Length: 435
Ligand SMILES: O=C(O)CCC(=O)C(=O)O
Image (cartoon, rainbow, N blue to C red; front, side, top):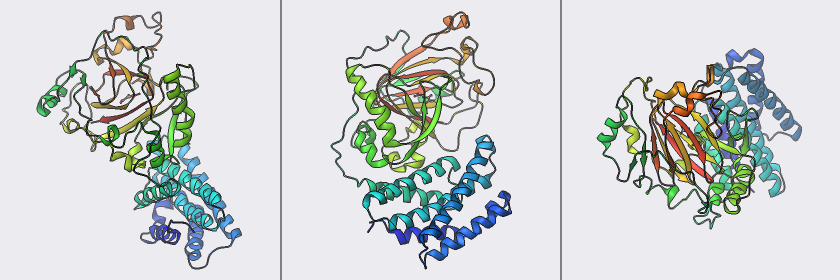
């Protein structure tokens, strides 16, 4: 017996499709896709009353795999923003029907181990579909997130006290020497003062060392240094990671992996290194990802700084309209991750939750001395800050910069278009807020 209410989950999946004419979304995928989807759906809704045979179940799964594969192929053919909505809808809906078949087969498995195996498989396909498709269609996203969290809780029941393993800072590490410090504020700035500051013709960075994160559960009662807490919430969930020390490297690649595998393979070994000073483990980075979109519980552990609601005015460096909502990204990785020198179009408050980061900033007035790439990477400098090639990039040597070591509980304000280079000095978890 599963403590999950399998029949209810199955009925809920079917009801997702009964409430509206979902075929409208698929019509551009073509007649054969619509009729295959329809026949699978009819079969599945009938199976609520008359449980299907193992052969039927296998056939349904193969048909759904074919639809999922087709949608994935189409998604790969376009840049993400140009993907026709029908293929994203097909991926989401075919995955939801596949979840139905997996829940049914989970129920039939005899051993707990086999049931858990199916539950992990289900989490994997649903998480990947949500990440890749963005979860289009009515109630799909909410339903999927609830199912994912129920499965995660079933696999890892939550305890209030984890007695967890904690990520440590290497207090004896040699830190970079700061020669050109960013302005430090030891008291929280007045909101209006901050609004005026960011709306200057050329705003300057601020290093906020004034306890703005003291009330975040991520820094106190549900600390993100506690690996077992993170595993309890999301150990079996799928996250996108980047492998390679920086995205400008030739061998850099992206992958989707289980959070537990990411932590075991990359975070824990790096954290031991922090203490033992061993060298050279492969680097992987969960970078620039809105983890809160998939694991909403994590968002209860942070709080969006009020300063993000200051109204940015357009100027030479802030050309677009402010985003409708603050854009949040998580940056979780081992010691040694590097975000190469690049610029972003928004105001940014980069909040450091775990570990320390060395950050160097160049004003946008120095852009030409930083030799941006041409084309789609024009927001990235060709100069390798760790080993600048001054023969190829001679003016780089003259560009002024400011720098800091951002420690847990501190926030760095990065004005729009300021070039930033970020290197993790310890295992690190940061959250950035773009506005
Ligand atoms: O922390 C990092 O590695 C990079 C952060 C960053 O680039 C940003 O917040 O825009």
